[in-house]
Amino acid sequence: MDASRTPDAPPSPAPVPAMPAQPVRLAGQPSRARRLAVPALYLAGVAGAFAYVGAVDPNEPGHYPVCPLFRLTGVLCPGCGGLRSAHAFAHGDLIAAFGANAFAVVGYFVFAGFMALWLVRAFRGGPTPRIVLRPRYWWALGALALVFVIVRNLSFGSALAP
Image 1: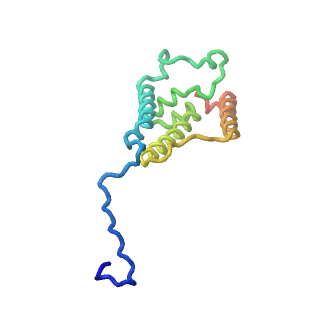
Image 2: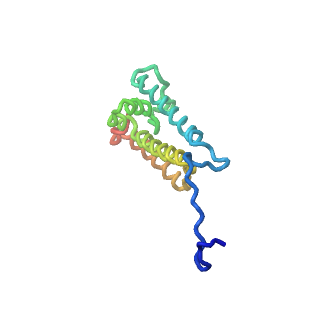
Image 3: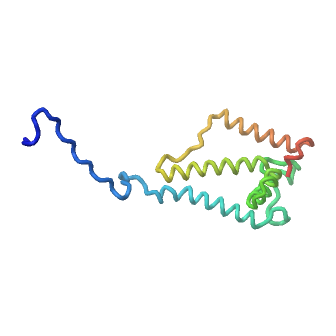
C-alpha cells in the first residue's frame, strides 16, 4: 500500500496514453487511398467523357450516331439532345445545356451531388452510399420521363426540344 495515500482516498487514475501521430486503422479496414480509388475512377471516367464531348462538337454532323428512335419515328426520346447538352455544359453554357436537354442537366447535378457524397464518405471512412428507392419512386421517375417526352414532342413544348 502507498504510504502517501490514506486508506479512504480513491485510487489515482491511470495515466492516459499519448495519441499516436498517425490515425489508427482497424484490422481489415482499407486505407483512405484505397477507399477513394473507386469513386475517383468513376469521376475520372465521367470527366474524360465530358472532355471528349466538349472537344468533339455534336452539333457538327458525322461525329456521333443519330438516335435510332428519332431516325425511325421522328420522336424525341428523353436522351435526345443529351450530347449537345453535355457539350454546352462542358463549355459552361448552362442555358444552352438546359435548352438542349433539361432532363440531362438535372441528371448532371444529381450525379455531381451523389459523387460529392460518395467522395466525402470514402474520405471519412463511412459506408458507400446506395441508391435505394421504393418502386413507387422509380415509377414516378419513369412517369416524369414519359411526361418530358410527350411535352417536348408537342407544339407547346417545343422549348424542351433540342
